[in-house]
Each structure stands twice: as C-alpha cells, then as structure tokens.
Length: 376
Image (cartoon, rainbow, N blue to C red):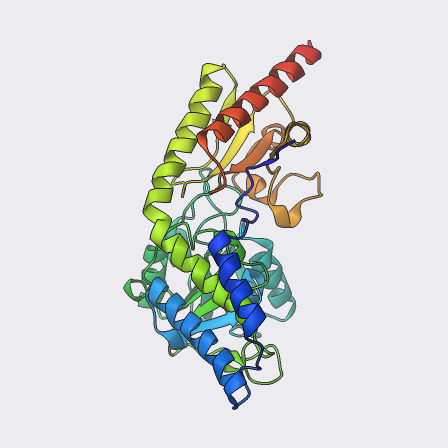
C-alpha cells in the first residue's frame, strides 16, 4: 500500500537535488574545517559558501549566520546565552516546547518570565507585548508561525516595538523559513531560529541569525567554532545541504503557495460537498497547515484509521506526540476540551498532487461516515 504523507509541519523528506549535493560532498570532502592544510581549507570554503548563500537568501550579512544542530538548539543558544538572574523575558504561552521549556529553566535560574496568551484565533496581540515591557525586560521571544495552528504573528511589527523600546527580539521561525520569504535587513529582528528539515533539507542541522552587535554568552564549550556559540567540528555536507534546500525553497516559494492554496480549497470543498462537519481553527494562516476539528470523530481514532488506509496526519505537535492530554496550544486558545479531542493537524507538502488530496478527503469521509453509523 502506498503511503501518502500529509504531516509536513512535523518534517519534510529530503529534496532529491539536496541528496545529490550532499552525497557529492560526503564522498569527496572530509577535511576538518579548522585545519590549515588544503583538505581543511576545502571544507572551510564549503561552509563559508553555504553561510554566504543562506545570508543572501535571508537578507542579512554572512557574519550574522551561526550554524547549529537544529531549531531547538538555536532557540536554546539565543535564550540561555542572553538571559540571567533578574532579567525579564516576555514570550507566549503557545510557543514550541523548545522555547517554553527553556523559559521554564530560566525561571528556575531567577529570570522573570511573562507569558502572553494568544487570542481565540491563535494570534498574539502586539499591544499586549508592548504593555508587558518594563525596565528589566531584556528579550521578547515570539514565534513567527505556530507549529500546530499555522497562524502567523506580525514579527515585523513586534520587532519594531521592541527596537523602539530598547529590547532585543527573538523569533522561532522554524515553521516559516522556507514557506515564506523574508529580508531580515528590512526588519528589526535581532535573533531568528531555523531548521533545515522543515524545508526539505537534512535533519540534524539548523541556524541562528544573530544581528551584528548582539552579544551572547556561550553555553557550550570546546574548540571555538561558530563564534564560540556552537563549538564542535562542523557537519559539512549537512550545512551544504541546508543551503541548497533553502535556495530551492526560496526560488519555489511563490509557485508553491499558489499550489497550497489550490490543495486547501480542493480538500475543504470536498469535505463540504460530503456534508462533513468540520471547523478550521485559527486566522491569518501561512498556508499548508490546517488545524481542523472534525465534530463527529475523536482525533486519535481518525489518525489511526487514516494510517491504516495509507494517509499520515498528526493529532498535534510531533514533538509532544504519544500523549493523550489536550494540546497546550488548543488550551491556550480556549478551545473546548471536547472539541480539542476531535482536532487534528493536516499539513500538505511538495510530495502531494491533487489525486492525493482527493484521496485524503474521500478517506476521511468514509471513516467519519462509518464512525457515525456505528455510533447510532
């Protein structure tokens, strides 16, 4: 049975061109980038070309790109490297665990943390951020796109507010980079986290944008690589793969958004035509991520039944899967518990076509109709 993958917000498959490029590097380049001989120089050149490529694609200086192991590590380096006892952090109550758990750890170390709640549409009110800033506020961290809802926050506006008030701004952009083009020079963002596996690059590599002039205290110690912030011998082929993947994603961004819009319309219209009771949650959606409540079936039952029919979707955030408790994000937007237990995340990727979308909607219709019939 062919499996159809509809969980691209969790991760994406490697782009075939990226695989070719990574294999080319892995099979021919092995020198330690810190070595001064030609083998090392060859490796260093690949890393720096990748850094320049990523910087150009994000609209920043190459000196502002720090290579890391993933988005989670980027978030940790930014937050732990900036905040200490008696500092004040403002973040949101529906961040990814990579930010929330780091904030919890900082609280144990004496950092004051304010958690701003999203509204019922999954959006952070910029004025609430502004109102929470006080004399000892050192950092505001607000995710660009929520990983469960797909809702997009106005990071340009928030970063302008923080800049005007003399506070640094960090954004977890793991769910948006590769889906939406950005020019960091046109924003007041100070720190931004990204992860390659969300835009058809390899797992195990990410980056942190750190605006020139921002100083972070190292939280790892070793050979001094990546401005002392992420020491350790660099993974050359993964870094190269991330740069290629981002280049392809940026180039394809506009056409991909048009295709996503077509997929979503087709999917939702199919459900509507079959009289399936559903609600799409959230407003100002980035596209490609649908957080959807099916009123006549529990999410766990739907996810399992679809998997058996060859379709992969998610019952919530992949990083907190395996738990039957209500999603923190759905709690934060004040969703009724009964509805939350009937809510899934469907995220479309570049591996799909219209036949796959039709097949998914037909499978959901069949499962829900059978479930409803059995309940009578």
